[in-house]
Image (cartoon, rainbow, N blue to C red):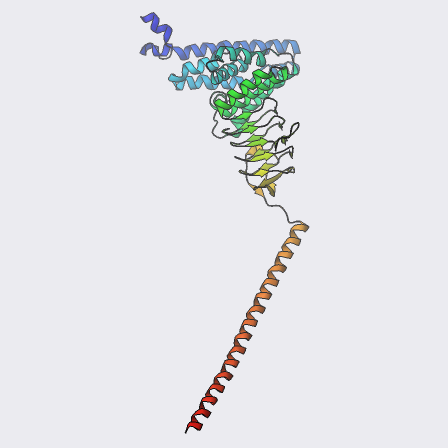
Length: 386
């Protein structure tokens, strides 16, 4: 029975005297990983030569995001023993960020027909088997930039490992990167099947053909829709409920083009093949039907320009405030016309009041004369009677 119990449960649950055994195992795994990283750094230094060349090779060999994720997971496992098995299986048992991400996404997206082991094999194929290709290097760079974006821009994300394990916006984003790679490989049915699972699990619908840059933040994520021909630049921040869609039944290039460092507020809708230029901001709840100029903020339905953004990269600072725009000639002309109309209206109001006063005076004078005539006629009648 003891042997069965030992195989079925982590060490920290087997005996009160062994509370620290699992954490010790994690420490040993971390030591192995550190030695492996040090060996890689040494090899890079030898290949690059002594001095600065060796230092540059060492910097390139260190995966700082993955190192931070492992350190956070080790610390969290020590603080929350009930989650240590989960953290070990999701992070600490893997050698690379790509393997850990494959495990996390496979378990999130699996169902009765798409098993976790099958999905993990597909994801590992995309994330790890293209080591020498430019597309593979770009994909791995984008994954790390996305993790950093969540940690740096979302105050609710207190660690890199939390983005990897707990934030569904990150999960949907990285799942899309995998389905996009499958789409480009020609595995379009598999990509569309993944799109269906992503929509069902994360409540976000991103077409596999949509092209997304690196360093993207999808905050909260629920209700986000991104169409087939949509293009999103680097370092863009998107909040919940955003729709980047087409109009009507048009085919071909029909979705918005979002340039770098754009901030799109919650429940905004951008429709049609229009460009939202670099560093602009769309206020929450806006309906955008026309192109948006760089570094401006639009708001309303339909959206209109309401000012200039305070920072040249609003998506990084997540600042939704604006700087009021300086008045232009058109603004001055509009104000002058509005003032003139107001003055004319006031003038006509005064004239109408004067006319009413004069009319009342005339009526009063006529009434007085009529009364005098009536009194005179009554007096004459009385005299004749007598």
